[in-house]
Structure formats: structure tokens, C-alpha cells
Amino acid sequence: MLFTENILVALAGLKANIMRSLLTMLGIIIGIASVIAIMTVGNSITLIVNSTMQDLGANNLEMGVMQKSTDQTNEDGTSYGDGYVREMTDSDLITDEMIQAYKDEFPDDVQYILKMENVGDKGKVVDGNKNANVQIVGYNKDTFEFKDYKMVAGRQFLNQDFENAKKVCLVTDKFVERMYDGDSKAALGQEVEVNVSGTYYNYYIVGVYEYVEDKFSFGVSDNPTTELVIPYETARTANHNQNKGDYYFTIVTSVNTNNDDFAIKTRDFFNVNYYSRNDTYEVMVVSMTSMMDSMNSMIGMIQLALSVIAGISLVVGGIGVMNIMLVSITERTKEIGTRKALGATNSSIRMQFITESVVICVIGGIIGIILGVVLGTVAVKLMGYEAAVSAQSIIVAVAFSMAIGIFFGYYPANKAAKLNPIDALRYE
Image (cartoon, rainbow, N blue to C red; front, side, top):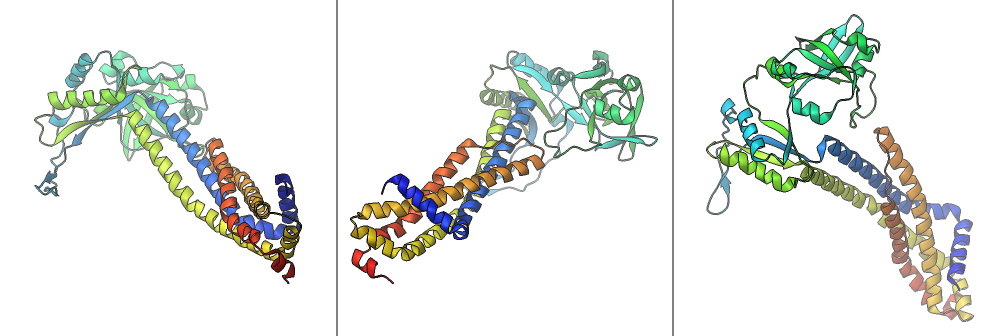
């Protein structure tokens, strides 16, 4: 019997027993759909994470002052330590002089030093029956040059705004929409009073910039918390941190700089020159590229673990296919005996039933792929993301369905091929 004839016979068998065939496919459908949905959600989250990290700056190094390990090691390799941690003092912080020396040491590699300081927790601006949620954030001059805010009205900060810690601010057009009916020009020059946990901060609006929704906001709110941006020095004054150093900032490197190598150079520069005699603290530097690779690896591991769990139903589905094939062979014993009496070889009988098994699994796999793509897309859309269906996972799913059909169909097919024609014809 030709291969195409085997497929047509398999399809005719499925059509004759539609309900039984669907129940047989159920395990395959659920397994494939689960794997495809998991892969779709995982791929979409990976793309969003990578996109966000790129927006934050693929050429960034995150640098911070961290506590040295307090553990010490015995001769047998076991560790001990009293766990005592000295609180961080001003002398442990990174000063502007240190940063300037660092920039002078690596003028071709360091583009920007980005600093940020929040003023308290989230606050609220209230005027009559109007209100808006804000977060007061101070950025230094480098951050403004790096971020390149898209201004809607007014101006960005001037040098004297930073140097004199002036009480000026930039607000979003979303904020203006809620507090000034969308009139950006009317907002300029207005004083806003922000209530942060009962403490009030007053700033004058000098500019309005375009609001960009956070990619991880999971849906649109009619009153989202937007950044009310002030000069870094103003934020430090509000927090009574002026004339102190920093314990954390971001370094933006040049495009041609190898970040992994430069992270080590940066760490060594600060630790050798400034922290070698510090008994408790040292500088740690992490490249954004390494963080991105780590996050992708973690998401991939979670995807794999969930896919393996979902794949268990494929094994159950395969056993179901094997069971139904054994039933089918029992029902068609006389047909097999007749074919063998007419000259059919063992291999042709074996191929016929393996083909039937593969057809069942492939059809189940296709239904599972369609269901998985729909479920994955709906899940991703509900999270507010764009779905990214993996073509590779679909190809693997089809190939895996065929493999299941062959693996679980071989035993019943081989049993049918070895039937004695006389015994088969006498079978009642």
C-alpha cells in the first residue's frame, strides 16, 4: 500500500470514529497547546525585557558601593563570621572628586554619569476637585542630556537651576491634562504643591514633556503616577543630602567600549585607589549586557521548566494513542489477515498502522498549535504586550507530534505485522 493510501485510510478511520479520535487526540492537543502558549508568553516577555533594557541603555554600567563579605574561611573550607555590618557613613560614599578623577582616567570610554534621587514615596497634587499622582525625581545634568526629553512646552533646566538647586520642575503632558485641562502654556510658571506622606514640597513648572507609558504598567490608568522632575541638587537638598557623596549611579560608556572589560577596569580603579583601606565597603560594577543575558537565561530556564511540565501530558497523550491503536488492530484483525493472505508484507502492514498513528498525532498537534497560539496571544494581550509567536516552537511541536506518533505507534503496528494470517482470518 502506498504512503498516500495509508494516509487516506487513516483519515477515513478518523472520520468514521470522530468522537473516539478527538478523545484520543486530547492529550496531544493539551500538551502542544500548553507548550506553544508558554513559549509565546515567554518570547513576548523576553522581547519586552530586551527592549526595555535597550531603552535604558545597552551600553550602561550599574555601579554601587556594596558591603564586603564578612565571612571568613577555615582551613577545611567551611566559612564563619560574626555577620556584623558597620553602617555606611559619608566617608564610604563616592565623591564628585572621585568621579572627576575617574572621568579623567577614562575620557574615551565614559560618556555620561547618570544620577537619580527620589524625594520620598509617591505623592499627590490636589487643586480643588482636580488631582494627579506624581513621583518627585531629581536627575543630574548628564541624565537630561542622555534621556533627551521630548518637550511639549517651556524649557529644560538651565545650568543655574542645577548649580543653585532651584525649586523648578518639569511635568508631563498627562499631568497637565489632569490639572490644567491639557493647556500646557497655562501650566508654565504655575506653582505646584506636592503632598508626599504629609510633607509638602513646592516647585514652579518651567517645562512640559511628553509622557511615555511604562512598558511594565500592565494596562492604562486614567490617573497614572508620572514623574515630576526636578534638578538633582534640588532633590538632594530636599532630602538633606547636599554635600554628601553617592552610593549608586549609572555609567554610560562609548559605543566602541567593551562593557564587560570596562566594568572590571572601573571596579579596580575605585577599589584600588579609594576602597583598599575601607574595612567594610567596596565598589561593585555590573554591565547592562550581563544583566540582559542573565535575565534572558532566567526566562529561558523558566520557559523550559514549564514546557517540560506541560510536556508530561504529551506522554499521556502518546499512551492514549498506543491504546487506541491496539483496540483498532483488534477490531481489524480479519482485515489484516485478508491483506496478508493476498500477499501484503509485514513491513507494509507495519507502515500502515504507524502512518495512522502519526496522522492522529499530527492532526492533534496542529489543533494544539492553533489553540496554543490563541491562548498565548490572549494572555500576552491581557498583559498589555504584543504577542511574539515563535516559528521555531511550532516547527518543533509538529516534529515532536510526528515523533510521538512513530514511538507510540510502533508497538501496535509491529504486533499487527507479526499476526499469523490463518489465526487472523479465524479471529472472532
